[in-house]
Length: 230
Ligand SMILES: C[S@@+](CC[C@H](N)C(=O)[O-])C[C@H]1O[C@@H](n2cnc3c(N)ncnc32)[C@H](O)[C@@H]1O
Image (tube, rainbow, N blue to C red; front, side):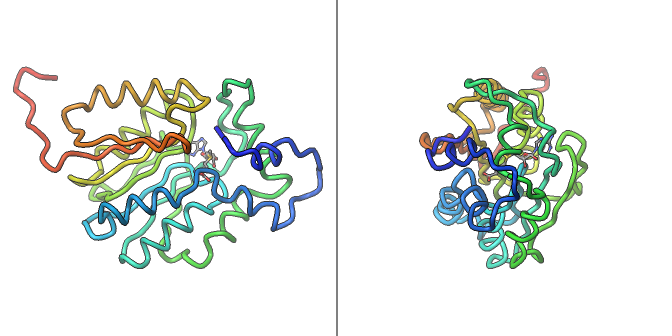
């Protein structure tokens, strides 16, 4: 799930005292959201209709980067997270449970407190939904220009999160998915199966391999299904 050696060193820390602000800085943005901001700018997603949405914000360093772009564009970032670091018990190839990694990263701090601090300058452009993404009810009329999912790594959630964002993506919008081709093979398999299911609606697929990011663009025109197709 995390490739950089500095993050691994952080994950292996054993101190029980709460992390200092400077320590927590290292793990505020685990994915490297600059890559997502670059996509938004390159594809002009800040200029087409629709908000941004993120499933799985953890400490909010990435959310803040998305929210800065959203604020400039007059959009909002919808954030869905359970804010319960113990919730996801999926194991990576090394046998580490996500819940245990999150606990180590937090080093005694509250996920929600760190998130609020990291995103404070952009809070007016952020709509937080503290809930299991499988249970979330979004407004019916919410359209998305860009979405990024990095929530629960169990295949059932990965598929459910794909469905949640895909049906709300506007034509020409992009969705990003974390942990594709990384150390959580069930995430990669689930995303492959969703791409197969939605094949006819996909215009372009890109990967940022070193960050384990999959990027998928929705077609501008979705072909109508024939009457006998399910
Ligand atoms: C890997 S972290 C997100 C990291 C963040 N995207 C980043 O790159 O900095 C995954 C997040 O998903 C959240 N999460 C786990 N299960 C969830 C669920 N069922 N619904 C919503 N959020 C969930 C966890 O609380 C955690 O904050």
